[in-house]
Length: 348
Image (cartoon, rainbow, N blue to C red; front, side, top):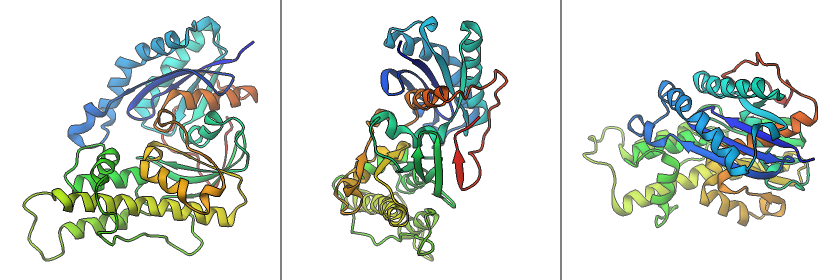
C-alpha cells in the first residue's frame, strides 16, 4: 500500500500544503504567496503573515487533498514545519496539523524547515548519490550541509550576517527595484554587464565555509552614494541600473559558487543540490552547470516549485522520519530558532 504524507508549511510568508506518495512522488503541491501583502513594507511583517495563514490554511489543505484525489482517511501521516520560523506563523500550521491528526487518528511528524530544504535533492532525485553537498540559500537562511544519509546531516558553514536572499532584497531596495529583491535584480540584470562594477567578494579566512554579505551591501551603497558626495536625487536608471544589478547579482552568486568549491575541496562528496528561494536564480544555476569543478558532480537542481517554501519538501522529509519511527506528540512546540551546533541530526 502506498504511503501518503500530507505536508504543511507556514514558517514565513507562504501558506503551503502538499501530498507526497512514498517520499518522492508529488501528488499535489499548493502554495499561496503573501508577496502582495508585504510589498509596502519591503519585508515580511509577522503579524500580517500569521493572520493571512489563519485565513488560508484550511482552504490550502483542502486544495492539496483535492488535487491529489486523496481523502484525509487515506493519509498515512501528517508532517508539519515546527522550526525554525516566525512563531505566530509556525503556530498556525501546527494547530491545523494537530487538529487533523487528532480528528483522523493520524501520526504527527514535526519537521525542521531548513533540513527539509537540505533533503530536497532526495525528493527531486531519489537516486541521488550520497554524500551530497547541499546549499540552502534564502531570505532567512544561507548555509551549506553535508547530507551523509537520509536524516543525518552536518552543517559545514553558515552566514555570519545577512542571508543571500536578504542581501538581494537590500540591494534591490538601494537600486529602487520592487520587493522581493531577488527576482527584481535578476530581471534588471538580464541585459546588464556583470563586470561593469568591481564589487567585493567576502571570503573570510582561507579555509572558512561561512558566508558574509554585509560588506557587499555596503559597497553597493557607497557605489551609489560615495562618501562626501551629495545625496542622489533619484535611483539609477537605464544602463547604469542594469549594470549595477548584474554586477551585484554576480557578486552574490560568485560568493556562493566559491564557497561550494571550497567545501568540495575539503570534503568528499558525490553530488550537489541547492534549495531555498535563491536556488531559483537563473544565474546561479547557469554558473553551476558550467563550473569546471561543481559540474563534475552529480548535480540536482530541483524544479523551481520545490526550491521556495513548499509543503512537498515537508512531506518528503516527514516520510523519512515516519519510516524511522520518529513520531511527534500532539503537544509539539513551535521553535523560532534553527538547530544549534555544527552537526545537526534530524531527530525528535
